[in-house]
Image 1 (cartoon, rainbow, N blue to C red):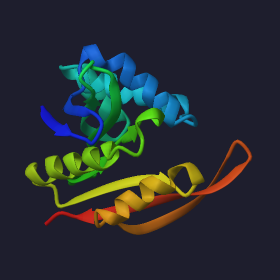
Image 2: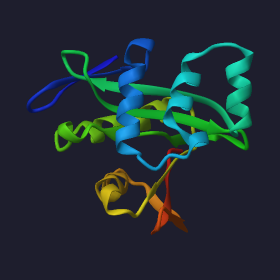
Image 3: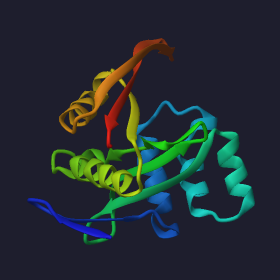
Length: 178
């Protein structure tokens, strides 16, 4: 676990666990409100905590080799943020940033930056060539896009989408690690 002192609070980034799972799922569901049933964060979080053949099979069916998640918690063990890494079966040397978010009440404290920096470091230390992330150009994600760009991610693709009467673009960013 990595301890980080922010201006107003002390946070610790630690691996997702059974103890933090429910709060992490609740936070992801609050931030990412338009998840389809098969892309729910809860699936990835729960499968990342399981061992054995069956969870690996389910991940592979989704095109994922492996995934791992971390939470940012305060001194009272409240989950304030989440980040994760996963690889797709077609390219195990490219890591993807997954389900990275910060609780609305904790935004503006640098927690998102710390989580993204932590994930970049984990990917580099694991030997990844690239770190990719996808997000959207919806106004709620503008700050996340700015954070990725400040960290050196480059926009490599935009894909138009329509969901629930909204038109937006899915944005694919990439950071070269090697």
